[in-house]
Length: 114
Length: 223
Image (cartoon, rainbow over all chains, first blue to last red; front, side):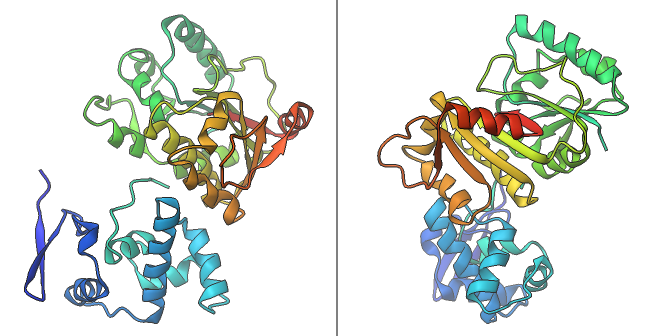
């Protein structure tokens, strides 16, 4: 059985799965994301937030997170980073940009091996 | 590196299996290195139908899609001959393969032992054919993942839906396919009438145009 952790925020206990994703996506808020990042020693800067919001919007539209190449194209077009590349995304989240954006964005761990 | 690859996405029936093993043996002997990649419902082939033959051919790279396996983890244990791999592994191998065969859900027996090796690499002009209606959400999702795997590596690839495969473009879960056209990831074609109500911007083709797509593809994967 997966080992569960919890996140304490504003007097509430929020459940996390073994991979650190929210068990209940409805628990997500920007404050929750900030607290998760703070505990990881990370600041959610403008670009990190852009990626988190883009991944959440893609998931809401298509039921799954985007391919990395989709996020890169969108970052060039929408976030004004003309030379965005996979390296840019990995600088934001070295442990896996899309997976980490899902985690901070309150989405389940991506199940695909792509 | 494998210069011959076979993709198996369905569990072969016993009668098909006999022919499959015979043709596989011939193809494997004719190539320096070979990979057998089990994906989706092809995972079931690793348990019983394929038992024995992999052990006789340890030089073949026997791969199982990790995600497909995880989805079936309750019913399937991975034999030691197989290794867990990803669709990225498959498409990387395909990029340098000289011949690729497939046995998918959209046809009973799609192995082509008499087809000659084509010049160049198998990823130059890749056509993914979807000719079956998804029986469950897993089948729908795994066909999409085959397409997204090719898109992730920016392969020159297209998807052709035909016959019962048009069902992928309608109903619950169909919306996920729209990311392919919305972001221009791959060509998407439908041979025949798409069901009313689909929001996916797929290009309709008639039978001669579909035949042209097949003729122009260096490699066809029957999903």
